[in-house]
Figure (cartoon, rainbow, N blue to C red):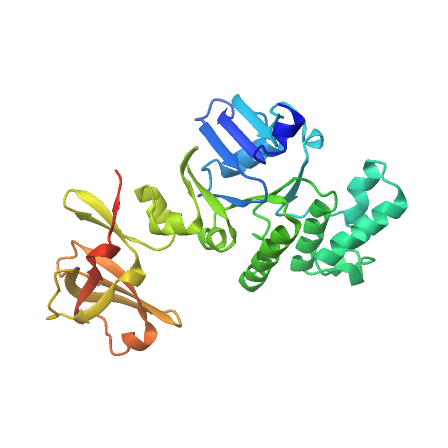
Length: 338
């Protein structure tokens, strides 16, 4: 590939990647994936689905059994990590405890022979990007978990790579701090324009941060799309169940998806219009969640049930075992492919 054409090549292109460990079943079963430059791209899936292995193949920490890895149009399948224009940010941060934050961030440049003045300038700039420039002389032990996470991010950013790989980097943080860092990571990614490839099993995290998401299941990619596409138009029952809360009902020989927020509760004698469908039954469960209340309604024989998310002010007066009718618009029922 010529230099000119590589300027327009995707940030990452994976072709027919397979990977097995020992004599076990394949971890990856032929992954094809293209990630555009400047994307915040997330690989989402349950444990063991292949997302972290794919990330490690991109970074060069593992070699595929077959298939190819291209970064910015250049084949790097057999190149070691240090020969790829990639930095990786791990969940455990991997900071040197005996070094200051400034020296931690500058360490990679020191190994590469960058002169001290430039190391200092670039490390200070990277720490400023994560709002830690005032504490660059501190040691990692003097920081909170969230601050150490920011240092690890600054270290990944300092060499201005074309690609940053992030392997569940927020997993060790509490919920409040995770949400703050989600906003911060997305902001920094947009500010720098660096391609971020992010691995998580947390679907809410993926939906809130990503430009596009690849949903992994048992070594294959079930679907790639924007958060809205995956939530509103899942390609399979697996994606529908994994992305957000869902009701999957059998109807007319196929499965339909109903999101809980599309269901409302009426009195049992409510008359359905021609545009509506419904299920009559008893309230089996009521869970107050603040602005919304989760209610499960099941038929008296327990054969069918749906879960509805009802605005809490509208849920007042509901009791368990109350007879109701769960109602939804036919248009909100999304048919799932087999």
